Length: 196
Image (cartoon, rainbow, N blue to C red; front, side):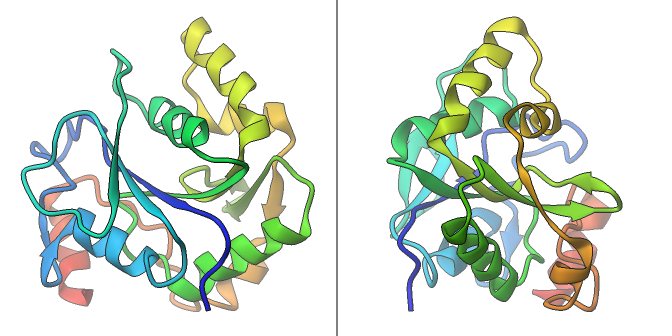
């Protein structure tokens, strides 16, 4: 059963360490962006792909949102998703393809039970801001940080009083512990692709 909130895949980063667009990398039967939007489409509706430039690949059935900020950052992608959302939005970075759908569902359900402005997993004692639920109530703080040039999503999470989804809770859904493995290099991508 689908969850009553949209999901946004953030794919507008500069991909400096990867050397090419992460969203366009082959993954599974398509691109990394298609992998992320396709699987989130099983849980959420609508699904948005937040990008800087028109993608050179199909993103259907996702809808494209353009992040028009001059500086590329995850904060600007989050701002764009929050501007579009009525309230809650599940946010996932394009380069976190190992997050299990069961964990995405658990995060979304926890948010629906909570009044917190964000529900984010705790990983090694720190909140992971690129795989959780943010609420539109976080938008003023995000815009203030963007204006001030402070683009830290962890800082934003602290500012708004995000609720932590404990490591014990998410590891019960992902015993491998790989849910938040970030694909920053070609080697990271090649290793994760073997699991796709």
